[in-house]
Image (cartoon, rainbow over all chains, first blue to last red; front, top):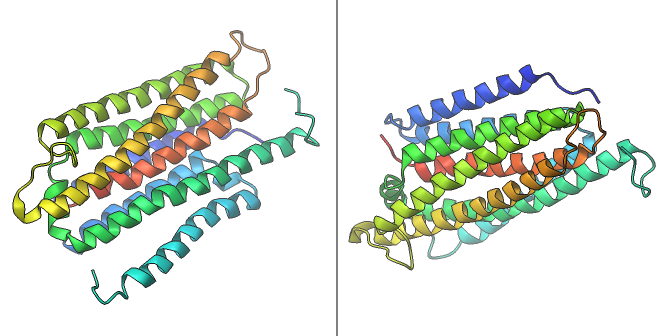
Length: 93
Length: 209
């Protein structure tokens, strides 16, 4: 497997720092629900850069991608099941 | 580098090592996921207290630490790349750079903890907060300490293994070495970075405007 050029990693790092700047600057503006939307959106984007470039998932075998996705999907399943309990209690939160 | 005897070839050994680490990381996703889930529930229950409490965290140090960890992922990626190219010196240099940034992260985190302590923000130890938001703020700081402490412990373990692997690299250029374990260590390190990427906005940026 050929190593990726340094450029790829350098650009990813710069993108990560740019996203960090975006998220911290946006937090100082009163944007209502957009504050958390931007914060979590940026975090997701940063995570995807780290996972696909730094962790090489972009060039990994389909099996490895499936395993990586399975972790997150299983978390989503458990979250939904737990919410089904918590949100339907008589003394709702 | 020789293939271990239980594998047909080196490619299979590589696939197997990566698969093993990713399965471990899947358990880590669930582990940290639970903390984030409880955070979500508590924040919906005490939105104002979470906003007030989050403002008491040190956003400058938190942001600096985020940059530190993102950069350490970059240097780790370069260490893995140097390993792929069988460049022992470069791999060692980037591993030590990563360890340095990880140590800087932990130092800054320690300074923050000390500040939190003198500000009376440590639940079960010396927690004092204005009465209107005390319950929710205590929930926030309970989660803040639980998640950042567990995360810092992961960084500490990574740091230890990074130094161990860097020291084991051959001193001379041209001597073959196994880059696979550096790659797998890299997966772990990057994942710990991903965890922090989510912790950062949830702990430091709830309400800054």
